[in-house]
Amino acid sequence: KVKIFSMLDATLISMERNMLRLVLLSCALGLSANAENIYSKNAGQGFASLPTAKKGGTLYMRVLGNPKVLNPLINHDVDVRNMLDGQMFAYLMHPDKDSTEYFPSLAEKLDVSKDRKTYTYTLRKEAVWDDGTPVTTDDVEFFYNTMWNDKVDAAPARAFVGPFKFEKVDKQTFKFIVENPNINTVRNFNEFTIFQKKQFDGVTDFNSAKGIMQPVGNGPYKFKSFVRDQKVEFERNK
Image (cartoon, rainbow, N blue to C red; front, side):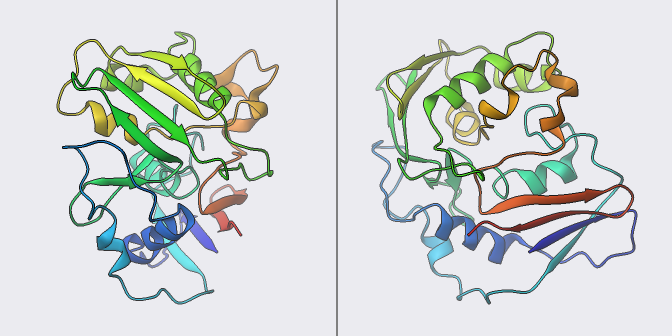
């Protein structure tokens, strides 16, 4: 269980080691990324070397102010990002804590073209949302289309990542294509946090949708409650 307190004099406890170990265990360490000269065979070993985390208990964190949104695309708050990214929403590929190299997370495989312009991801077949429905490329496509919708409050994300194209191959495989790759391209793509298409079906105004404050995630923790001026509470995703 994780309780993220707002406007309270709570003790800030570092969550990096044990929390990210849970991410590792939840995201199936051992699947190999098929991309020569980008990932080493040791990616993820930094997490594997950590002592076994104690099960159970409650972790408290401090957040300054009430979260305005709990959606990774339109959130612009660093504190909120830290409690969403990699915790409630899994990265496509997760960074190793020591080497900063990436290992499989929501995606089980990544192939990168020789010219570094095409990034082909294969989603894990067992990846599911908190409601038990599978994570598919339909969700990735929805994420992409939402990001590039000018009416959505995602201008910082659009500016940070820069233009790229999306191509759906099948339910598990998709491509990101960029014309002018740079040193940050693979990191930006790997650390995308996809949200569920189903939750926003029929929504005409994404910025005010109910789902941006009651997120359905795909990470090791899931949303439980938000009490204004008191707490945001997550629970372990079993």
